[in-house]
Image 1 (cartoon, rainbow, N blue to C red):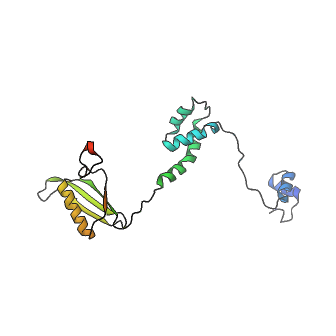
Image 2: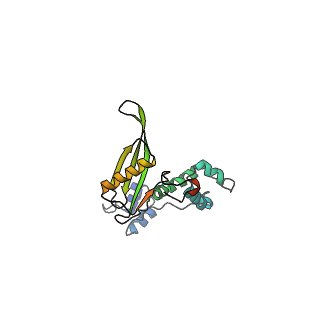
Image 3: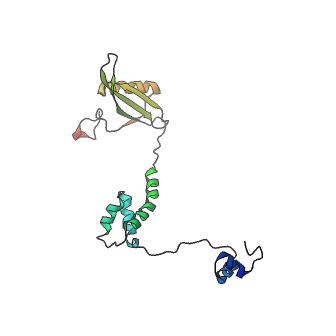
Length: 193
């Protein structure tokens, strides 16, 4: 800027506070170089691969990791360790958000489950348990919801019949999330009704 205004190298050096050789060197460059932080060795360098692995498996605090690497010979401060762990967190959060989408063709699959909704007053004012049955078609994500007072097998079958009537048919298979009404027993965990 000063050079384009006609100032000499000596004047630019005085105005900018830099040495004349520095001004001359910058003026000779066709484009200014971007600042690069000098690479300095860190006390943490020998432990970075270990810390990355441990942090990837279980998200331990800096204090816990410091206790692990001190016996291994780490002599640096916890501040350096915290700065390094802060660089790992965005990567860890991004990996946790990744989901693998499981696609099924139409009519292939549905997912069903129960949830407890708490105790609510009935017509006489008595508090009774309320449960919700949910079935979702895997392809279209069409949803069926029914509220019941029980999660017994008769209620489950009734909810299925209502869902199939609502959908106008039934899928080839239904996935259940460890529902005890569809399992025969604890010793027969892979066998279903």
